Each structure stands twice: as structure tokens, then as C-alpha cells.
Length: 226
Image (cartoon, rainbow, N blue to C red; front, side, top):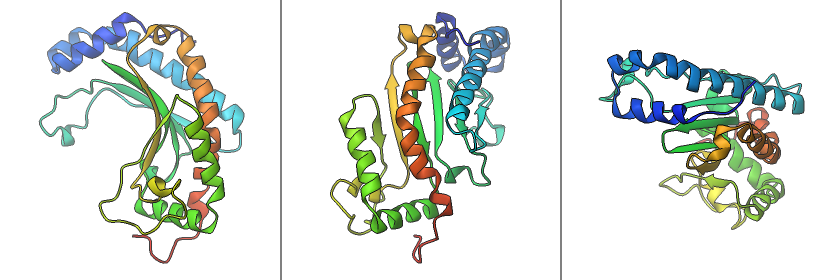
């Protein structure tokens, strides 16, 4: 059972950021496994089971990233990541087409939320859905505006996609992808089971957003999906 991360978790993450080489990592590998990777797996398993209990027919699965970078894509970076994350979602041929619950930790921050690094086709379907019936997403956006934990991140297209159905939906209509995120610096709750309970409450709030976006894949493809 997940009991919380520790001060050694954060110390290791700072260490790998400042000493991103094989020699340092091998000397601290047992700390990585005991204080970061295994607790992350335990947390991922517990939160995946929680979400499965809420949506038992969705085939949800979890994935915990490893610390090793793809050696084909180092681009001048060291061989190790200085953070770790897990996600829970429906397995899909294109990982960009399904909304994903996630939790991430790095040396100076932890975050969790719901994201969709969406394909152009998925975002075109979202715009078409907004045009057909804007009210469901407007209601979700209003719920998001009424709370203070999560912040939407909506990187915009450089060229306008046209007029949105409403002012409220304009940032979503012009978005290339989206995420709904909570971020904080490492705090005491990170070092106890309270972080699991907090993330559960957060995921429960985000569940209606998941329900809305998860069905996009079955929407008809718009005539213009650019």
C-alpha cells in the first residue's frame, strides 16, 4: 500500500537533475527504486483501481513511466529523466485520442489532472461538437471556473479556427490540445497517504470532463478536420 513519498524521493530527483550520468545513477539506484519508482507504482495501482470502480466498463489501465530516456531522442539531455509520472486511461491505438488522468512529480513540483494531447482530428471533432450543442461543455467550463484547484491549459492555434459558439468556449474552440491541471511545490501531504486522498477527490471532480471527452473518438469526422 502506498504510504507517501519521502524526503529522499525529492533528494534523489534533485540529485539526478544535477548529476545526470550513469555513474551517479547506478550509485543511487536502490534509492530510486525504494523511494520513487516503487511508491509511484503503488500509488498508480491504487488510483487505477479507484477509477476502475467508478467506470468499470471502460477497460482503464495504468502506465508508470521509467526514468530512462529514449537514447534515440536525447537531444543533448542526460540519459535519465528528472521526474516520473503515471497515467490511467483507455488503451488506444493512438494515445492522443483519449483523455488521460495523470500524476507527475519532479524536484520542485508535483501535479495531477486530466489531459489530452489531442490529435488534430480529435480537436476538429470537439469543435464540431461545440457547434452542434455547446451547452454540455459550457456547463463543464462553468464548473471549472467555480473552483480554485484546477487550471485549464489550452495552447492556442496561431491561425484562428473561426468563431466559437460562445465567448465562454472561445479558448477551447481555438485550442490545439488541452489539460486541466493542479500544480504545487512539494508539501507535507506529498509525504503521507493524504496525497492519494487528495488526488482521488481531484479525479472525482474531473470525471464529468473525462466522460465528455472520452466519447469524442466515436463522433463522426468533420468534413474539414484541419
